Length: 113
Image (cartoon, rainbow, N blue to C red):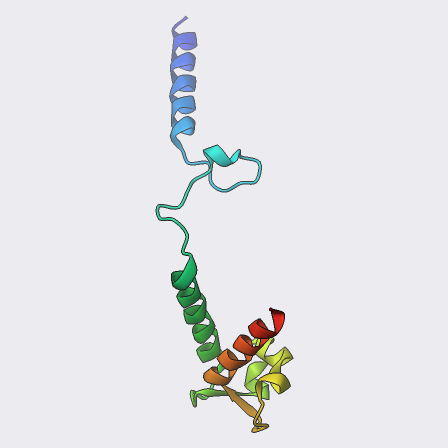
């Protein structure tokens, strides 16, 4: 009998602990039970600033010699720039700067409208 009571006590304690644990972002967990971020997602100008900062960080990481521009060889580690290198390099210098990349993205955005 004591063993049965001990088993029930341990099982209920384990169930209570499991109920308090966050469930994560598993696709099988209903959205209402998933862990939510503490802050709302960025939008508008804040989202654009975050995207630009991430793009600049990727550009800097690909700029192996640190001269502020990417050659076609350096661009291979930044897939998007490598696949659009000739379109970004409008001055045909064999290298693209971050400002040229931004200008290309703005042109592409305007063309989509």
